[in-house]
Image (cartoon, rainbow, N blue to C red; front, side, top):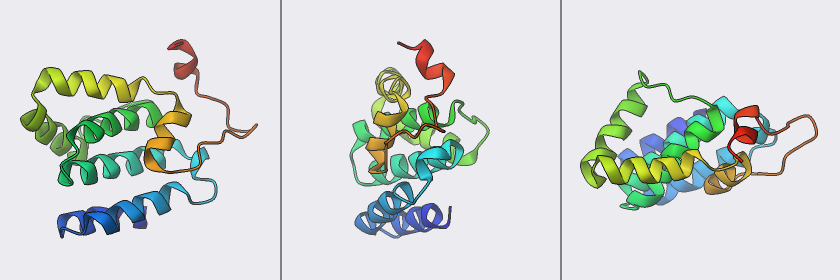
Length: 135
């Protein structure tokens, strides 16, 4: 989580490339592919960095991927509220909903791949039940 916080601070300071490197590093940590709540936070930070980098489509899809990874969107989380507001302003509500939906529908392995992390499932780490229902 420290790498995620540093990535957000880097992005706020205009160091978007460094922020992206920290996110990739956090996603690639050993065992990261088994801690989906943490990976959801990594995805939120990645969406924020993509937004600041001007890649609105990637930002919205990664925002949706955070839902795919965590299984729920914490609508009261200030980071979620701010990201949704800024993406809605930039894309409009319909386009945000479309791109967010694309990210949210990703299987966990593909959502992890957006972050540059290890998407390899392990036998002790089956795909969440909500992903199986989407097929």
